[in-house]
Image 1 (cartoon, rainbow, N blue to C red):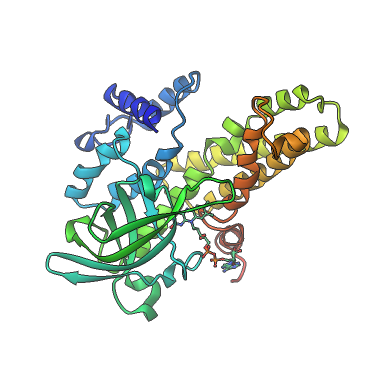
Image 2: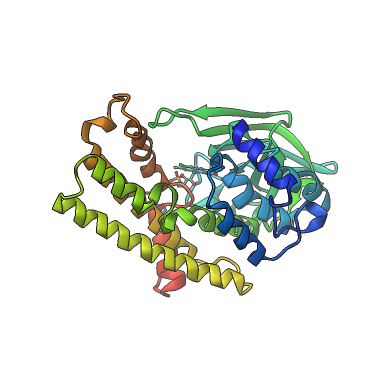
Length: 348
Ligand SMILES: Cc1cc2nc3c(=O)[nH]c(=O)nc-3n(C[C@H](O)[C@H](O)[C@H](O)COP(=O)(O)OP(=O)(O)OC[C@H]3O[C@@H](n4cnc5c(N)ncnc54)[C@H](O)[C@@H]3O)c2cc1C
């Protein structure tokens, strides 16, 4: 994490950390064309992986900018973009995941703030975070969507307990978060009281845009050049079944890239991310599943036992971690429902 942080800090201090951000919150106040030009340049270099910041910068910061009070924006936006702090998303609960409007964590008005009690789960990165984007029930549970309110929760508030969950990859990247009599000031509320559903939807749209990110189009782990050299290295490049699978993945990645370019054009035209983002998320999970199958066949037993051979056993993390991507950020079934109802106009 420290290499990732020092790179982000250095980049921010040089003026490239938040190119399109408003200057009063630490941004450079430039256009998305400037941002794209910088990214094109940066892609030519190797720098420490920034995954730890994905949620804070891709999901929490845009929501904070759109819905936060001046105090909350001044306190957190620079820190998030500079990489001084990490943030997490505190939405899911043991009894509410896909059906997020069913959450039970309650926030009750007290003085000039809110008293919060409840439990969140599957909170990625909460154990490393200083800030959580929290959604709570602030009224009658029967009203579901109409009675939710969002907050920016400092994770070091008294009454917040974070407990990591062990995953089948062997790591612990997500957590249970217990909230017992936590008090936070009203200035950390995001959006209007009882209008938290709007904040949730805006965050989930940014999440789908961030999850179906550049890798969906065939870079990073999904680089086909990298995969081709792996197949050559293990003598599988002439295998007709492998070649067939490789070309199928190559084509799917090209389609994902074009789809992404289309939705980026919409964003550039000033439109907000829409349900089409679900296509990006589905494409990413499908392509990672295909990659996982191909790599498993190419590497065989090297993927289940660490032989010390470079760049072999490390793929086990993808093979064991990729099924979770079908669930996190909205399950495949839920994404298909969104596409069926909101894009294709099919009945519920
Ligand atoms: C890797 C990972 C990271 C995560 N990170 C976070 C995080 O940082 N913050 C956070 O708040 N949450 C996070 N989550 C939680 C995630 O958002 C939920 O797991 C997800 O929304 C599903 O909710 P659930 O687990 O309660 O399953 P359920 O909603 O109970 O779903 C169970 C099954 O029913 C299906 N289903 C449910 N409703 C429908 C429907 N209407 N139509 C068809 N099928 C349906 C689902 O597709 C699924 O197969 C993460 C999860 C994973 C796996």
